[in-house]
Image (tube, rainbow, N blue to C red; front, side, top):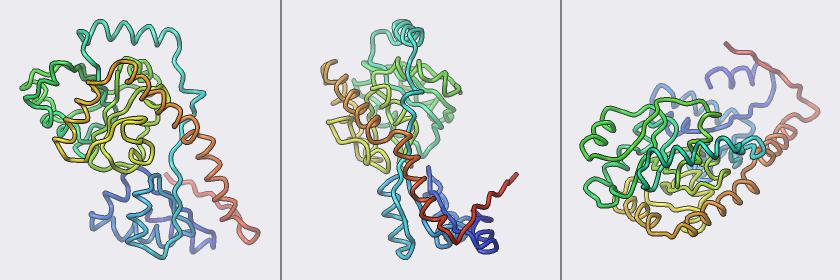
Length: 286
C-alpha cells in the first residue's frame, strides 16, 4: 500500500487498488495508515471493493475515484465433500452435539467478528439449551469465560487447514457470522457452496448475498434482540425449511459468486488498464 502508488508514477504504469477484507475499515480510523490508504486509492486508475457497502463508503469519502464492485468467488468444483467426509460429519454430530442444533463459527474469531457479542446476546436464554456451538479458530479469554459461565454446549478447535474444514462445515446445521463489519467472508461462500444455511449480521458482503428469510437469515449488527430473534427464528423452522434456506444459498453462490465471475471481472479490468500505451510491470516484494 505504501510502495504501489510511488512505483506506479515512477514506472508510468496504471495502478489497480483492490480493497478486500477489512483493510479499509481499519485503516480509515488509524492515523498512521490513513494517508497511505488515501494515496493508494487516489493514485489508482481503478479501485475495486468486494462489497457494495464498502464501495459506497469509499465513494462518499473519495468521490473522484473510479471504483468498481467485484465480489469474491469460490471454485465450487474444488469444494465438494467426499463420501468419507460426509460420513465423518454424521458421526461427529452424533458423538458431540447430544441431538442439539449445531451452529458453526469459523475463521479468525476476533472482537470485530462479534463472537463475544453473540454469546452475550444469548446469555440466560432458553435457546441455549437447544444449541451446540462448533468454534474453529482462536478465541479470546472473554469468550472462553462466557462459554464456561453459561454452561454453553460447545466444541472448540484452535486451527484447522481449509481442506480439513469441509467435513466440519457438514456437521453444522447453520453457520453464524455475527460481524460488526466485514468484507465478503470466505466462510460465507464456503458454507453456501455446501448448502449450509447462514445466520449473519446485515453488513457488507452478507447483505449483498443474503436475502433475509429467503436464502439465509440476517440481523442488525450489534443489536442483541435482533440477534436472538434471528437464532430463534432459525430454530423454529422445520428441518425441510432449514434445508431449503441452504439450497437457495447454494444456488446463489454457484451462479453469482463463483470463481469464474470473479476472474472474468478482474480480467476485464486489467485489459481496460493495459491498453496499447502501457506495459505490464511485475514487482517482487519480500
